[in-house]
Amino acid sequence: MVTDTNVPPLPPHITLKQARHFMGALAKGDPERGSVIVDTARSLMGSILPSKE
Image 1 (spheres, rainbow, N blue to C red):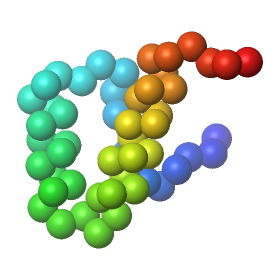
Image 2 (image 1 turned 180 degrees about the horizontal axis):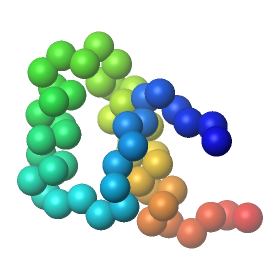
Image 3 (image 1 turned 60 degrees about the horizontal axis):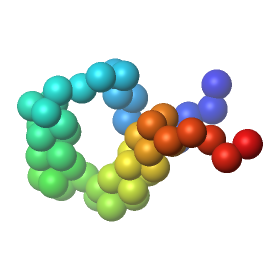
Image 4 (image 1 turned 90 degrees about the horizontal axis):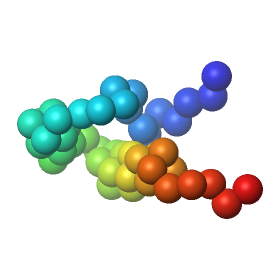
């Protein structure tokens, strides 16, 4: 398995409360927060949208 260190493992379904806590933790000082947010959003969108294959 290949993983991206900037994409934290998330369960398939998260609650709004969990998402708020996740974003709050990033905002408190993760030095890589910008790339973590972008990579997490990309991963999330990839699981929602159909692939272009």
